[in-house]
Length: 244
Image (cartoon, rainbow, N blue to C red):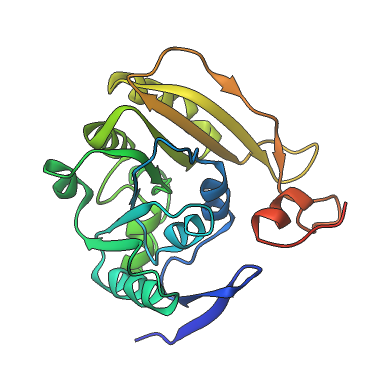
């Protein structure tokens, strides 16, 4: 087995995360999604589809005390996620469930927020599948595709519940079409750019189940400064204290 590595979770020096080099490690996408999704007083619980090592629940636990249910299909990722929850003494708030998303939603309780950092790549794309099974499942639509994720979210969302996802801009039209097919109305979109003057490479989107029409395009988010360092907005998301 690959060696597990324990680090502080970004700049949160009171929170740690265990990761394995051969498995999917959380990325900027994870941080962006945890900071984008709407957390309001109407939320009683949150469900994270495909939690992997539970990075999103850990980050959300810094922003809310609501119960978080994290679904993960890969057994070794579940073990890692449970270690991370225990390491940070969050067993009372975060529950890791070893399950296929399709199976979980068959009889799951309704929730008010579903978040997902999904596999981005279609299997039929000219994307040489990584030989590592952990990474294949995390990055490619092998176990579940975009429609499966959105349909599953719709099945467990309360009326006016929200679904938030990070994806790639070239899938925006697909996402809009599939969300509306399953009665999730797109409400917020934010495009993320590597830096000023570059094309967007990340899309943040949130929809509302049985929500009214009306889409808000939020201000652009620039991940890096011209010198390659992280922008102040991103550094704040990391938990850094910024003097501006």
